[in-house]
Length: 180
Image (cartoon, rainbow, N blue to C red; front, side, top):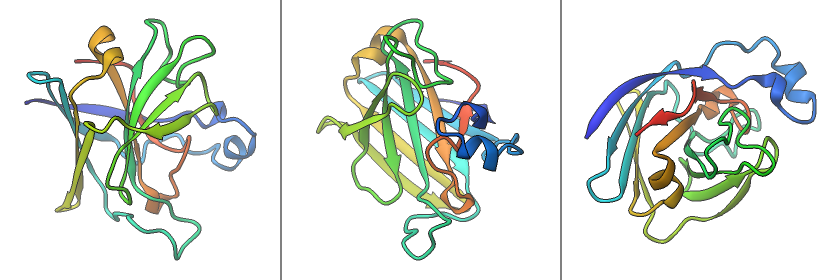
């Protein structure tokens, strides 16, 4: 598996719909997860692993409404010009796969811009295996077939640290589309 370390940046809070996040988190300008190690193997479909530092893993946040579940996602363009930073745009959709620390199966996502994310069951043969050890999360996505990734050969990543109140648009993201 070819592994590389990539810089993550904070998702711009000013883009968030509704107004609250943009005001409440206007001073958030540094990614809480500054980098991730990304491994890619395309020998039999797509196997993509993410590894990032996490001081306080969050698998269950039911006792604290200020905390959320750790998560990560892969995003791919469905159309060549789909923007990653806004999760697509009308007529320029993106597709993705979402892992949450409190779930055993990943979820499929699709969006055409901020605030438009639709979640659904991922295909049965999609898997996300996770492990937390020595202060790091490692999540390996096994995606035997994924047409948009096969066609466009690029993806973006997002990481949420739930203990730091990251959720929805509060996240660390890749600086752009990453080539396979």
